[in-house]
Length: 374
Image (cartoon, rainbow, N blue to C red; front, side, top):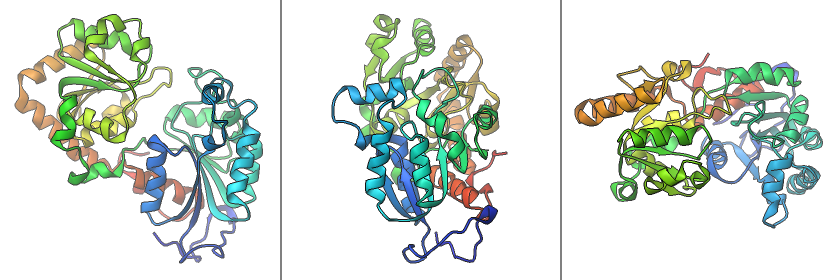
């Protein structure tokens, strides 16, 4: 993607192309070099931006407790270390835009420093720092909110909360799946799916509200499997253990586990007040049937009963799953329709990143992320 100097940025900010390579817009990416954060960084590269990526967690002491302390204290005693690490990587470079992904270790002084190197500094936080679920984790982030030019949030409720916290500008976006899932050759092969084969599955981290639901589905006789970290912490784990594979799944294993299920359960985080998640985009993209909690946002994404199956309580979930397992033709029809709708919705990382870059710099149409976005 080439941005010409004649394309004027918003609010009179001057965007210099003196340090650009071949006229490409220069982006400083601050975010973990792992998981969905890395996927968003790679999307920027594929879009053709000249990107420098810096992992703030690389600044932490290489000792066991450092990440735990960062999570529980909100980076207490670590944010200045992170700021110096970022400054040492930037040195005298300048950028058209600095993009902070998540930002739990980025305090006010770091954002002020970034503003000396970038015309615009923005943040996208896919978590919910405005809820109480994660305790003090977002202390540094919240203090830095007023110093960003713009915040992007994946929940409508976050817009007012971010503004109340001092944000200058806030825009809501949808969660996004990885772009590889749009291509047939990017989907998991049968050999990769084989270890994860299941009629019904949930792939994701244990949370207190999730254990009772999965235990209930199993008690009602659904042939369900669970894959993901921390499930051994569930009070229900003695009942869940025979059906659970505990542990973090890397990107390819996660995709294979989702794709290997005839029916994929989509549980939302109550602590985050989610009405849809990345999983809402990934499950249909991977070809499995999305069986998720009924919310306004899920209903905006997929037609209930023809492109996905939604439920309002565990009993309805059990009923739907039994009917689908007894009627494989219907299940395959709904899964195929959901896959087509996911591709049409276009909620993938490249459109998401393009939308945020364009919105931050005022470079044209922002409706490119996908349909269903207000």
